[in-house]
Structures are given as C-alpha cells and as structure tokens.
Image (cartoon, rainbow, N blue to C red; front, side, top):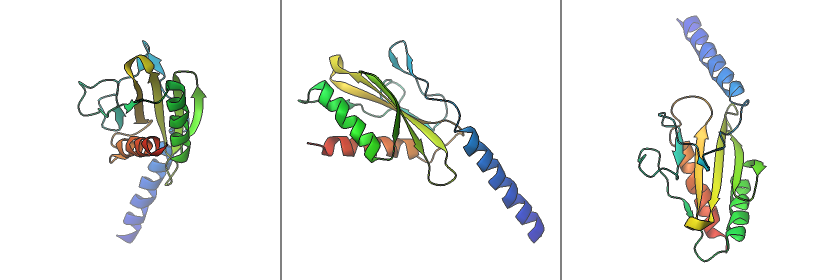
Length: 151
C-alpha cells in the first residue's frame, strides 16, 4: 500500500513539474484590436477590459489627478515591487511575467494605458492549468494597493 501511495505522489509531482516547465514557454497574448485579450472560459484569469464578463472582471486602475505618464511609471514600479518582471513595454502597453514560488509556474500580467478613459486596464492570467485558487485576482489587488499607495 505504501509503495502505491509513493508511486502516486511521484506521478503527481512529475505531472506538476511538467506543467510548470511548459508554462515557461510562450508569452502574454498582447493586444487584440487595441484591447487586452479577453479571458478564456477558465477561472484562472481576471481582466478589466470586459465588465460584462462578471466572473473575470476586476476594476481598472484610475488615473485620477495624476498625469498618464506618471501613472504609467507608478504601475511599472508596483509590478516590480510585487515580484513581476516587465518583459515588454511601450507607451501604452506592458507585459510582465510572474513565477510562483512553488514549482515556478509562469503567469502573465498585462496592462493597457487608456488615458482617454482615465484608466489603466489590467489582465492577469495563468499560462497553464484550469483553476488558480484566486491567485491572479489577488495579484491584481496587490498591484492596485501598491499603485494607490504611491504618492
């Protein structure tokens, strides 16, 4: 019985490791028709671009009285301070990569500066798997707290 349990544990760990390694390839989806890509049907993604998709919706970051360029810089700092690595950056789009502590799964955070709307839209998604136990939503809320805490 112990041998069977040990074999099951090893197989589960091997499967998780294979998923983690496969998540290290690829990249964030980027913009689709000038917007962040919509979330797939899986619960491991959140996005502020599509408020009608209530299951995946998070509020965008407000620019408020801050100049768009300053807000964009503040967001970049919040992403770095929350453990993200910015891998693509333009005047109105950024993609960042996060790796989980356990096994090193890779998740993507994307942002789009919509100065005309007075917001920065956010998308956070896991590259592999189905559920994420709320990790992407928590990540966006941590970025939000860091962003809003900056004077």
